[in-house]
Length: 470
Image 1: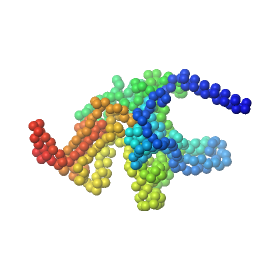
Image 2: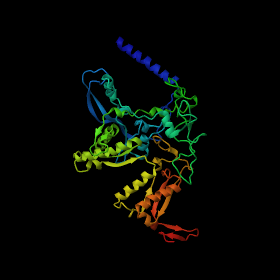
Image 3: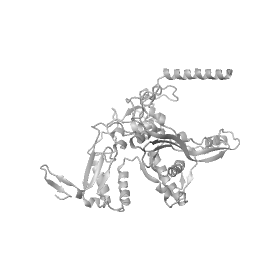
Image 4: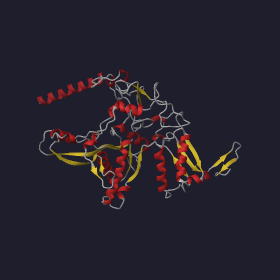
């Protein structure tokens, strides 16, 4: 009894200390008990997590660099988090993050707003499955490789190219520049569009991939909740001191999402039909786990961001290999479970290549015959428009202002263009150039309609043109 009473007293004291600590320190993160992250009601019937894939590894270095008795660990497994709405669409959506990130980037924004995972559940009634790439985040990496390298004095075993987006690397990739110096110690960090921006202003009569003179929409200062005061104050900082002018921009909450690409600690694989035949870990374990997840769910749509593009392609390969092995029963049944594959893309080349693929699916690889309308539509909720431009991990949309809405553009095309796929793809580039965004179609719903199905009126209400005839 005495021991029981002592235990209860100790817990009480510790709880009081924890509460006092929370009450007296300013949190850098947004408190969900006081401010909602989700923008609306999240009507779900189930949520949770599980692991897919992985393989057993027996090693003498499971927990130490000193060799011990053989022990088993599981490596290469993939963490999966899911949310299922009460009323859902038929096919779930699986989303894989990109380099230096984990599935956490889908759950909420760095400044305490709704992430893609709950947004898609709430807005589109999609059953959402967000993953951590094997070797990353909650999926874990293989530390025994490093411990064995140390214990056997074979440092060549340790990967030398881990891959990681640094904080200042993220800044110069997406948010701004370093000027008047070469690094964060000697130079000054500025946002895109700030005074001193070395990039020229965008020339809409001659569009280019330059960002133009506008600030990024990602949560960075002066946006609220975009920095951690302790990071800005350099509390506990290690290493050389940067230029004090950079302290604020080096204190983004977003940087906490960045992690090493520790999948390099996992083994590679071999693919006889691939070039090269050695497949790196990133395309081995994640792709295999995605194929297993799709098959286990009985079908899904697959989406990947940035670095996840190649694992998605190898997922298709694994599904085909499973079909060859008869894993899913009927021929082609495994691949048929992949109900769609998407990748965040905003380049004209990818768009034009997709037209070729669409034409082939329609049975006319050299033309768009029989396709009365080609709609390059963007669901505004998922569009990479002005409000989510320059995002390393695109954010769910905020309410769009009227001055940001660009609306729908209708383009009539003569039959001689719709009947020639090369002419049609060229026409797409011309139209996007006229709209001032040749590398992408951000913010526009573009409707390409066969001229024969259109009628134009003149100022007096008469028919000026019908089906291309004046």
